Image (cartoon, rainbow, N blue to C red; front, side, top):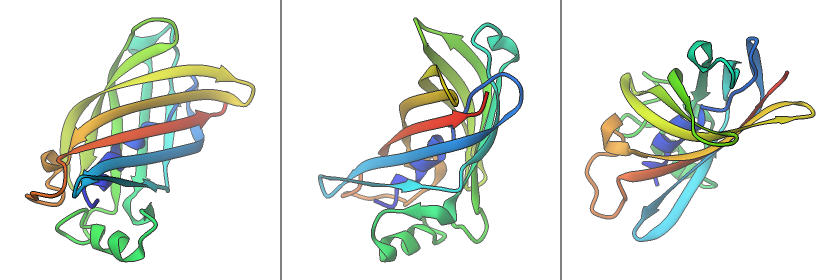
Length: 175
């Protein structure tokens, strides 16, 4: 469950629109298996700037951060444990960040972004598939990807907790 937080880092990806725009809405959720049971939560405090144009992928940029203190697994005791140094060490690393490196168009409104994800001071490159949709209030990004919590030294070794964490995100940025 504590490894779930690593997935939250990827949720920071919520972004869109070409001129620099702030993220107006973001929902990041994460999930993993613990004792064979799927568990997860959400993370809040997402902020970011988006300069995304599907016609100008080479100059597009997405940057976001999430506040690890805003983790919510519907279990206060677990949330506090995830904030300790063996998991997210929020005293030393209160934020996670995500910064785009490049984008490629797949088909239709489907894209893949390469991002630098930083959690606990460790930066790893991750590929994130997402959809980009224009809506009345702005631009909407939806996606899902997996990370390995051990890559970010989250939670140590565990025989009961999965190493893979799935991160789902939905973000909207004003036009």
